Length: 97
Image (tube, rainbow, N blue to C red; front, side, top):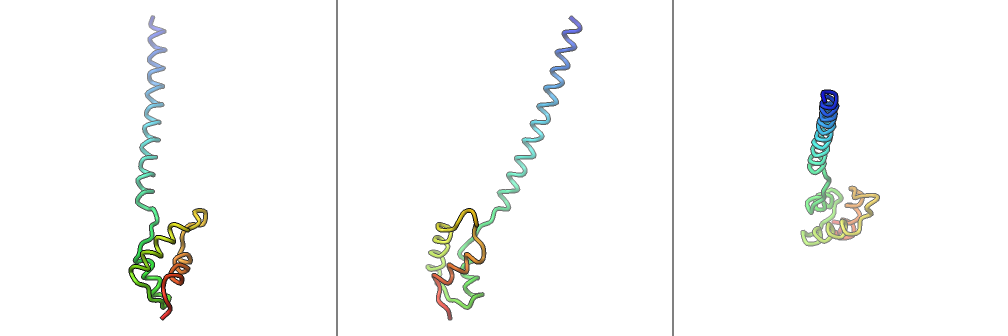
């Protein structure tokens, strides 16, 4: 009976160790996910307007909103959106001054 009890205790301890490792891995993954959410890249109308000014273009708020919408809608997910992409849409929706 003592031998069987020792085996059960050893199994329990082994499972506790595995449970601890799983919880630790889960907590680390959860933290990485929270960090990722804080670091995601986003574009806004102000980026369109800023780039237009830098390029010597004029763009209305309405056109900047439309440019942002179209840029996000039409971008290549494999390539992402860069300042080059923003420049393209400024040239399409703005006017050179």
